[in-house]
Image 1 (cartoon, rainbow, N blue to C red):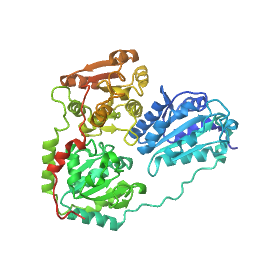
Image 2: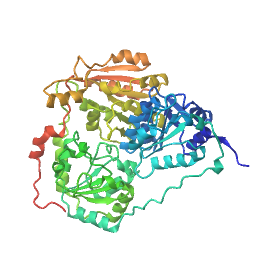
Image 3: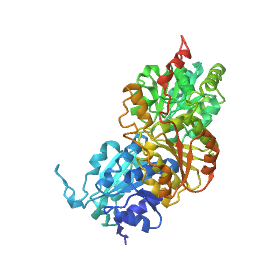
Image 4: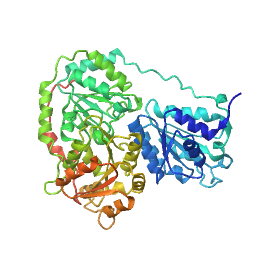
Length: 568
């Protein structure tokens, strides 16, 4: 005889069966039942955040570290809308996250364009349709298996991203018979074989290149191709730079390229005659406003998403392929190596590293943010997880970060959501019991999700929160200085301030360290190794600086390689 069960219990069993052992969320009337099913089943841990946006971003951080689909839960109405920033973040950075929202009783859901009938009643599916791979309200209990399987599959497969299942309160209580439910069968996706002609095109270009370069993006990790890329680099001797999202995919690179990238990495891209782009979207923060000034190279762009190909560099050679499959096939095709190892090119690259590695250090008399963070990155554990926020602090950390071992760097790259680092670090901490977890934020980003310090303190989570504190919105202040006649609306002492972080730390039950000098770096490293939460208040100059590529136009003019016969 078929066994029946309550629909909310089925959802919990489904998630547990997929290896989901924790979800993030905020309790509310429309999700009490489903959360009860998750926790009461004994297989899923519910992490109560203090804002639904933090739940969404924590699920994002957890997914990046665990390699599984992250899950966040929120109640109807404002609970669901508070998820929106995190939903967009997961979608734009291609992070697999399933969002589950509660909904008002099914009969209250309005079918008209007028106001809805119930309390906290909102059509969240219409709200998030443009920022998800799939979103649906389940009003027929018999569809729950199909919709769950579809949402979970789409979140994790192809180009990963955000999906959402909206569940009315009464539907959660319905009785279903799992054996009678229809499942989801993915449509047969077209295979993406790596064609011999594509490999020949790349090999011919590499053999003819004098200054080849690999640009590795976040798609390398999404495709689980880190080891494959390492093997390719070892087999070919190709130099590699990364995007912001690719900074932690390979050890030994030249740094990250882009608007705020390392000078030596940007010079390498600019002067390359062949640029092999692997899993990078080539957005404006990467290539700049004038694409022609980004590189002189023949660009070969490989990506699983055909929409990204020729979107920016229209005359590039494009290869639509899974990144790992492509890299493995190229490595095999290379065999024992190429006919040259480009010694002259490597000599130039190493010269730029020696000459310009110090350029990111912009302060002589005050604490230099990049130099200080470089010391911390170098002294952190080989498996340390850094979660960056958005603003000057993010770019300082990116300029300082040279990955070692299994270190990770989590960024909100596509959306650029201030307030990302603290909840992302929480997600990383829950997903990894042993790794050192370090949130790096600014005093602005910290205050976007300040309430999550309560979760860290209450649960004594072993997270170190480093606040690069200049008591202003530093990046906005720079923009206003450059382009708005030093009119600092919203970024001056009258309109913006940072609270007393020492009192704040003690209020939330965190240890506190104040840093005013780079001489304190050893004390900070010692604190990173201690168990327990700590708020580290790093005082940087009010008018702190952040170099970008436009500040170094003279460097590019002086180091341009004029090649009459570029590779093609």
